[in-house]
Length: 309
Image (cartoon, rainbow, N blue to C red; front, side, top):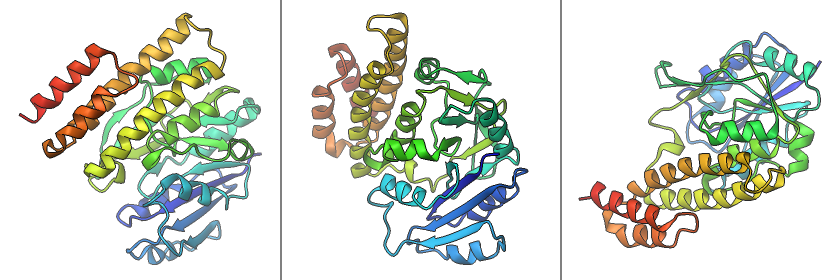
């Protein structure tokens, strides 16, 4: 039977106890939980010490890594994992008790896959469900998974994926983009070449709260997210070719066209967060964007100006 490593880069204290407790309550016991305190100003060690469980390994970074390079911290934490499969856990999300047992059944049935996926529930800071994914087929080929992703079937997060450790190592770890924006998506797509085994339930809850680092509106962070969004679009187009989708085929058009709509929506959302005092940057970014047609640029310019009028 497979063994698992939950690897948790930790910084925030508010939901840490809930996150740890959800992992320790798994109904499948062959796992370790590695918690890495990323030089948090909060007393995370006290929270961890409340759990007297031999499956927990606690480490501390001497200096904060994730604040400057989130993916570097992810990969550093993953390097500590000793088991067959790894889950990059977070310090505020929740795993249902059958998360690992569902994964183990799929691994036994589909031993060649590098990626097992749980459906996702999105929850708020009070644990209320505010969104959820619809069920998928049990096994998707790489092309089917890419089409499912392109059409917006997924709630983007990282901890709903169980990854074969040797395959992640062979990839070089999680793929890096600024602020880890799209790093989870790119890594999942890159590891889907042998297909994706999907759990029958939404056994993972992704938390959205006012302390999520990804929800911040700082101008400099938004600039980095825009940079990542454009870099990822280029990576995504290359990936379509790498997995063998024939140019001008239905799948190529569906995968590109489906994601292009998401790309435009994400770009417009980020542009709207740029303060009007930085209007010159917003205009320059839109005009010189490599992946928008002229009509799309004009529409986005008007949208930005109206938003700040």
